[in-house]
Structure formats: C-alpha cells, structure tokens
Image 1 (cartoon, helix red, strand yellow):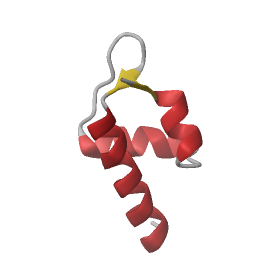
Image 2 (cartoon, helix red, strand yellow; image 1 turned 30 degrees about the horizontal axis):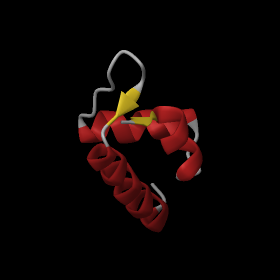
Image 3 (cartoon, helix red, strand yellow; image 1 turned 90 degrees about the horizontal axis):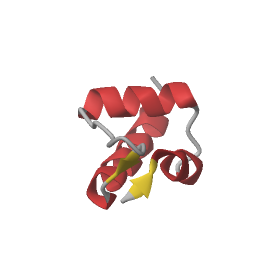
Image 4 (tube, one colour; image 1 turned 180 degrees about the horizontal axis):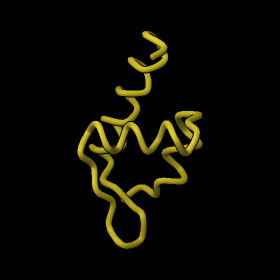
Length: 55
C-alpha cells in the first residue's frame, strides 16, 4: 500500500490535481489514505497525460 501523500509528492501534484485524478479514475483510498501500487501507477499515467495536454 502507498500513501496518498507519497503519490502526491512523487508526481508533483497539488491537492486539487490529486483530487481530480482520484475522481476521474474512480480510486477510493482506504481509511489510512493508502492506495495500491497499481492505483499509484494509474495516477502517474494520468499525471503524464494531464501535463502533456495541460487541461
């Protein structure tokens, strides 16, 4: 399990951007604000596309 804070720092995301990523990818963290490594990879991929197209 990976903490959301680590995912945010790793991908250089603001809280707003992290929220957008989680909402658009339908990711729900557990009670300790942790997600799986697979979901972390999905957010990293989302970030790459988000930065490439700069919405």
